[in-house]
Image (cartoon, rainbow, N blue to C red; front, side, top):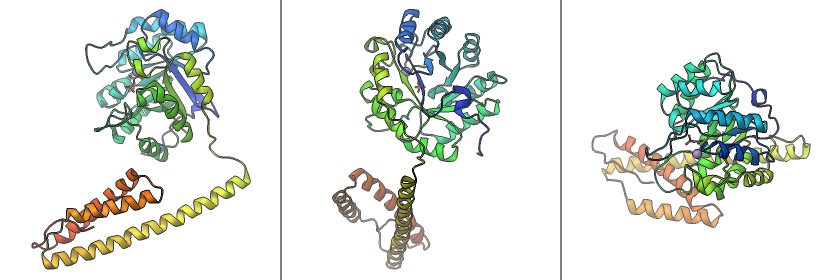
Length: 370
Ligand code: PEP
Ligand code: MN
């Protein structure tokens, strides 16, 4: 996908040199709750006041949002407290209802991004409309689905366009509700630097205690904004209680956030950075060369094994190797997880290459000596 013609975020948000902040309750629950949240957010520097109106919930017996009746509450909060408003849409009818109530920004939820029919329906409803649209990443770590949704909305003519990084459902244990998998956000930034990225620490962490840490991480990566759920009485929220913070706590989080600059005009800093990057380049070149040399040895081993028709998978050798390399890495100050992950990849590719060589002759066994 080539560069998309989209507006710089400052053109639609007016925000420059600091992150866009979107905050407000997970769900609109009552007019009083919406107004109280907005009132208490007054002191914090919030650019858009969010509230979920239609909630795509995993289980049917949970609160599914107030629906259209809550839109006037959001509208009133926006007017009374001078806030721009934002909500999630999942259908064309939601888009139309939101527009009728002067919503200033809409986003497409993670459960909707996964469905191209729904995204297309929303895209069709957005033709000729200038409202900013943010697209949450799909629940699964599927870059194609995310980009596909961005393309559909873009093709409808939306130019005030961005994404929300809210983490991914993955198998296995994680300390997060939705694993951040920062590498996917970074990959999107690499291929599409023109797309603003807003991080949603509330849905990534699922726990209010971790919101600050993840918001800071987004700033450290130079991302463009944050969306944080705030509720006047978080413990009694009708949805996502554990992750919401009070408006006052939100103010503290924002105050403590260290916003990183993209670069610095300081000449000494730039010179040091250049030197260090040069060292990284040289080390990386050595690393690639070593990997290639290692692979030549793996291939030599495969040749011998094929000749002798020796079955090759020696689990004990692989276990001993892995243990030794991880221990060495840890002794040198690297983490065990990191070393483990790297050796998994090295081993997998060695197995693949050896199998390829062994299969060149029918007598060969398949497996690896790495
Ligand atoms: C939300 O922002 O309230 C929401 C439902 O988020 P997600 O689509 O990321 O689950
Ligand atoms: Mn929520």
